[in-house]
Length: 238
Image 1 (cartoon, rainbow, N blue to C red):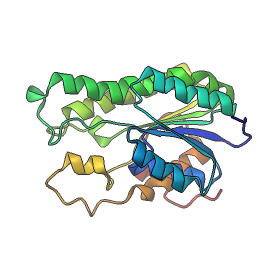
Image 2 (image 1 turned 45 degrees about the vertical axis):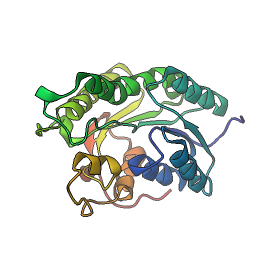
Image 3 (image 1 turned 30 degrees about the horizontal axis):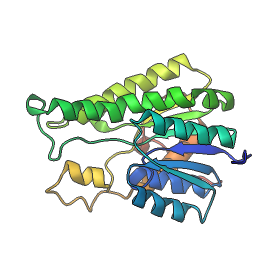
Image 4 (image 1 turned 135 degrees about the vertical axis):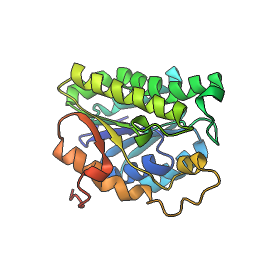
């Protein structure tokens, strides 16, 4: 693997939905991408589409797997830099979502492993490269982290924990830009699973919020929690 002079981003859960949309937004700017996802078929299709625009390395795997995280770090080491980590991979939990009094605890533990522990582990694994570049960490949050919605106790509380972990990371590493970003309701498979009997065709496509994320990278405001809707939606030029 040859070191690159182009900015490098690791985007987890990039085989579909918001992760894939963000990867395409970065690809248009010429970023080198390292992407992952649990379904190898979807990940290959995503990588093939992205490869028409930029250099992309795709590794199928689960972010809760230590060996998979090590493989991602080995790729980053080979590229010689890391400018951005997007912790996008998330797990909703059971669908339809149960009340907390009936939530299967083994599934709750799995939600926390994916939505809280894995992003922290990814940061731990990639922190040396991020520190060297003075890079950026973006943890994908949700309004369920701050609003008490019935049935969202598992996912919502996990995202609330991720929000706080993100804030602590920012306090501990002031040289980094560290953000928790709530993208809002989007037309994704996860959102459909949250509302299995509802037509979500009125929700915006994930690509609609990509300009907000690019604005965040360009302006690099103070570390903190942001809503995509509150960031400028004006297109950002490369």
